[in-house]
Image (cartoon, rainbow, N blue to C red; front, side, top):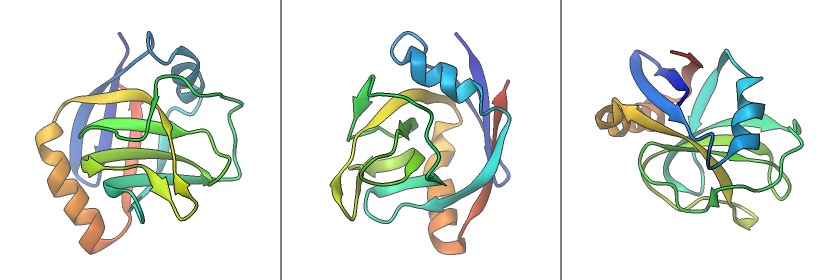
Length: 137
């Protein structure tokens, strides 16, 4: 079980990679660490924040994919209809884009600090992009 630290603005949380359910996605994600970027609020999906990656691709296919991440679930959308992205649900989320329904690989789940997610989501919604840092714990 690989433990991960997720920091958004001044909020720190712990997460676990889901290596048994999404092994290829977890392996590709590890190569991105340490990851430092900005999260912005989702446009179409409801209560979530996301990191856009544009035209970047990791050569993945779908595994452990869903359109309905639960609070604290992080998905990696492999790209295609929309740009590659990582989305983190902080409440009800129906993963989609202006092109329609999307499905992303659920590869990480917040295990400690999940109670802060609603506050984080509201901060991103009303104050704009926030720094995100993801690395091994």
